[in-house]
Image (cartoon, rainbow, N blue to C red; front, side):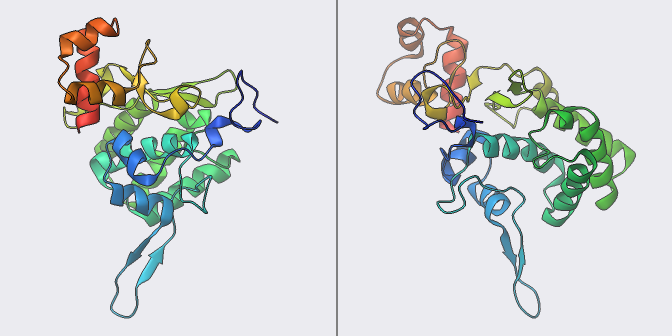
Length: 240
C-alpha cells in the first residue's frame, strides 16, 4: 500500500523505508560506535586459525546497494543498542534469539513489531539469556534496559514506529534511562528524518551550528522560543 502525505517527496513510498541515513550519521544519532553499527548491518569478519569467518548481518538494510539505513533500520538499531549497553552483542546469539521470536510471532521484523514490547520482549530475553548463560538477575536487568529503550518509540495507529526519541546521553547511568527527557526526536515525516527538538521542529544540527558560531544558549532559547534546558540537551546531543 502506498504511503500518502502532503507534499509527497517519496513517490508514494512509505518514508519509514526510505534510505535516509548513512552508517556514520545513524551511529552518531544513536550514540553507537560506527564500527559496531556497521557490523550489525553489513556483517563482520572474524579471524580464525584457518581462515577468516564471516558472521552475517543482524539487520536487513532497506537499501543494501548503497548501504543506507531507513528509519525502520534506525529503530531496530536503537533496540539492539540496549542489549549492547550491558551484555555486548554476540552476533550469532542475538541472531538466533531474533529468529526464535520471528518464528513464534510470524513477523518479519520483530525489533520494530509492537508485539516485541510485550510477549516478544519476554521471549527474546529468555532465549538470549539461555544462549549466553545469563543469570536470572542478568535477564531481569536486560529486560529493564530493553524496556527503557522500547519506551522511546512512538507508534502510529497500526502499531508501526513513527517517532524515535533517542537518548541524548548514555553514560548517565541506568536509572537515568527510565526517566530521561524526550527532548530530541527523529521522525521520517519531519526534516527528512534528521533529529529535531521536540515541540519545535528545529533541527538539532542547526542549534549546534549556531552555538559553534558563537550564539549563546540564552540567545538560541530566545530565538527559537525554547526552554534553555532543551537547547542544552540539543547541544549535548550533537557534540557527543
